[in-house]
Length: 100
Image (cartoon, rainbow, N blue to C red; front, side, top):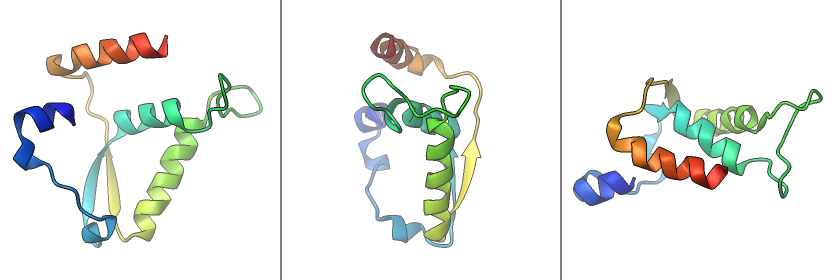
């Protein structure tokens, strides 16, 4: 968002979720998964896991987000776009440092 805000501020505008009713929207799957891994299910240093100890916060987060969008009359299309562009390298490096 910072890249867009800095370079194309007129391309950004906030809208209520309801304004997308009946539409199909693209969702950056890798960013959503990362967001849920960082935020959902954390209690201190512990993360949401299954019985085998595998982290599941991203699965639960994607599940509930999808349900929320469908209930709002929106069809999400999750996009897995492969290797990140060069413009994103610095941001990814900063995130890696924060996580470690």
